[in-house]
Image 1 (tube, rainbow, N blue to C red):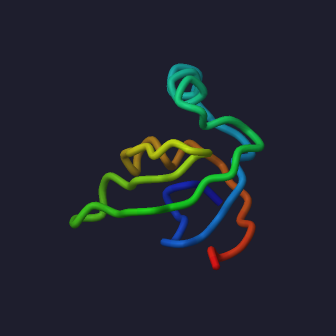
Image 2 (cartoon, rainbow, N blue to C red):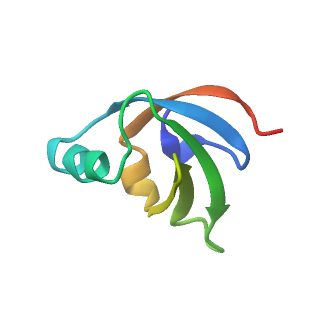
Length: 77
C-alpha cells in the first residue's frame, strides 16, 4: 500500500520510499523508513494531502505520496 491510499485518521509506518531524487527530498523532511505517519487533511479537490510525521506537518502531492510505501497500523483514537 502507498501513502496516497491512506484514509483520514489512519496511522501507518513508512516502509520504503521509491525514486532517488524524491526519496532524498522526503528523507530531508523526515519521511524515513520506520517513521509513523498520519493523514491529517485533504485539499478540497483531493490533492495535495497533509500528513503528520513526528512533530511536523507536511503537504504532499498525491503523485509524490504514491512513491511512499506504508504499512497500516491502526485508526487514531
